[in-house]
Amino acid sequence: MGMFVIDSPIGPLGVTVSGETVIGVHFGARVEAGPADSHPAADQLAAYFSGELTDFTVPVEMHGGSEFERAVWGEIAKIPYGEMVTYGAIATALGDPGAARAVGTACNHNPVPVIVPCHRVVGAGGKMVGFGGGLDRKRKLLELEARVALTRAWG
View 1 (tube, rainbow, N blue to C red):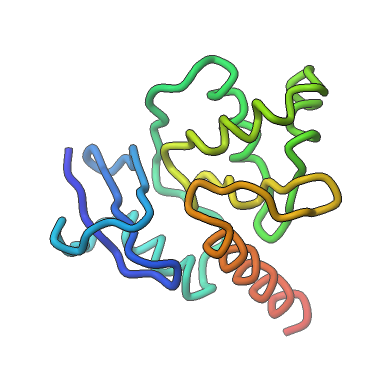
View 2: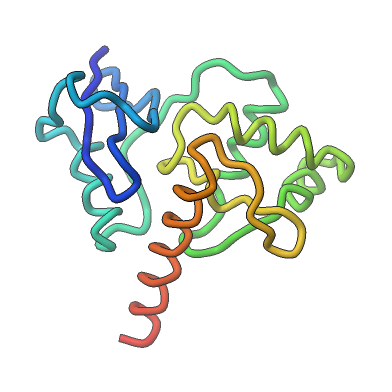
């Protein structure tokens, strides 16, 4: 298991890996943790932030979490690039329409943010609420994806 740090438009990200598999992404990592070598996760994150990559293919392993949280993370992983889904829609998809708040908690516990895109989960009516990395980071990620999606659609 190892950790490296990449610089990004939303600040330094610490990436924990086990071989080729990503097992954690952490906001606000200290740069002293070590530079990113040519690991596929570092390359893919750099391509994502430059607008070249819209779908991560690096293997991810989600450790911990309750059965409900793991189910939420599975739903989050299905959200297409540049799109948003509400906490309530995820709760409904999991068969518990009243569990929007619990979905928010599960999003906050996501061990691999950005790659498993919890930033694409928003409040009712698209309202910007909650994000483990802070709303400013959430907004920047959504703006990046909207800009890239629009550029791809219109050339």
